[in-house]
Length: 279
Ligand SMILES: NC(=O)c1ccc[n+]([C@@H]2O[C@H](COP(=O)([O-])OP(=O)(O)OC[C@H]3O[C@@H](n4cnc5c(N)ncnc54)[C@H](OP(=O)(O)O)[C@@H]3O)[C@@H](O)[C@H]2O)c1
Image 1 (cartoon, helix red, strand yellow):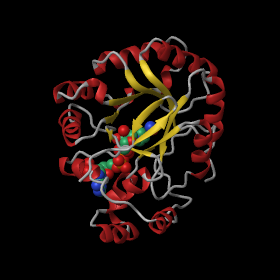
Image 2 (cartoon, helix red, strand yellow):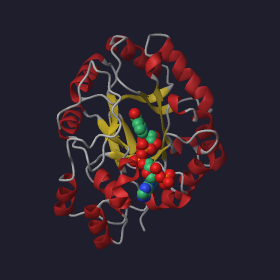
Image 3 (spheres, protein in one colour):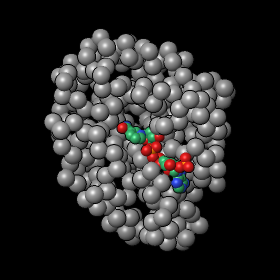
Image 4 (cartoon, protein in one colour):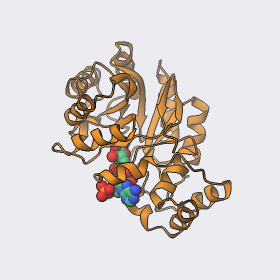
């Protein structure tokens, strides 16, 4: 089986199309799981200040023996740290906890209207200029806000990390992101486990000898979108990585796109000042 994970151009950096998510892996649980992910071959780890596991992720990276420069490490600034000064201190704190001198990508976790976006982006750009992160990006920014951020930022907006799985459409945001050279990362790519019971995904999986989870992750990366599945089950760490030796046909891709539905969103914490794209 080929283990070469494709990369996705994101502003001026390349990101592995498959990463390991660590939300809700708290109190030390992330350590053996991230170590296992690195052993299996993942080279992209996603954490956030708010996940309270940056120290654990850092410890796992160190213990894994995989060289730091072979790993694409993302963390996120929480929404109460968006003011000039707070953001820079938050980034320094994250690096201290992770035990690294830079991350590869630093994201604003959710858009927030309290601090002007221009101020937050200036601070984020400063963090990048100081070399604390190789690239900067956003999370949960709909297309109009992504456009605004790109206009305000000196450095390219490398990435927008948003919820995406077969029950959501991403048409508008993907088109805007493509236009701006911004990559998209899919969070909750497995719809938090719901894809496992989906009859369409089960049927497509049977044709390839793959599970519904594998079909879903393949569908995402085949669109040039990055997927960061999370599991606390070591066998599933392997399962979710084993998606590089098959391809879905155009017809199968279209069948999966047709599963999108208006009530498909699972995590809606968008400030009411903003609106998701209609599709
Ligand atoms: N930027 C943001 O605002 C944001 C928001 C949410 C998440 N994220 C990031 O995205 C990552 C992934 O999202 P997520 O954790 O919400 O959800 P997810 O990856 O879609 O799903 C995780 C759930 O699916 C189960 N699962 C894992 N592999 C499976 C498989 N092959 N078949 C069936 N079930 C499977 C897991 O259970 P087991 O543990 O029992 O395997 C877990 O309950 C997060 O960990 C985090 O890094 C970012």
